[in-house]
Image 1: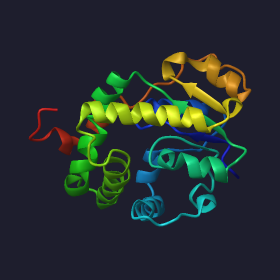
Image 2: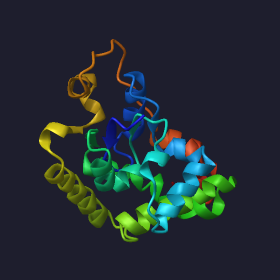
Image 3: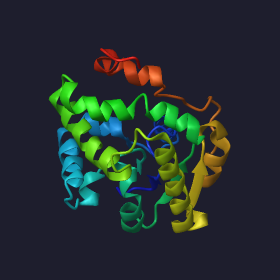
Length: 215
């Protein structure tokens, strides 16, 4: 099995909702950060990537038909070249709403989770995200709102400028089923488009984030 769909969007742009949608449309299993956190092998692989090691992409994505979210989307250039027949979806979101969300979730989870999460597997996953995302993508400046939003918008434009237009869908989860299904060539389901991973749901999974903090 080879990846048919690649997600190039940043975390907190609706990636879990897109994962649910792709699973429902028959493009699952979909690789997402939550799959990574449930697998020692996946965490080990991505931690190695965070430390600068090259990965065997075919091994990493064995059994998956699609990929969205960090850490995979950090490597969208490498993956779009390696899986050259895969379509690319760039999840998109209002930049201010995105930053409001990420500053309450991934930012504290990556900073505090590597020390405070009671699960050692999750601590290692948070350590990986700290290096790949906070220190890699955002150069340690995710706490700087203006810088982070500019980095998000620059990333968006780079993907649009790099991926052929007929291979790329820029997609907001508020767009619903129609543009996604048209892009993938599948029928539109009669159910509502799935939603998941609100700030409240994210924090409920990580109770250490609401201790001794105003978040």
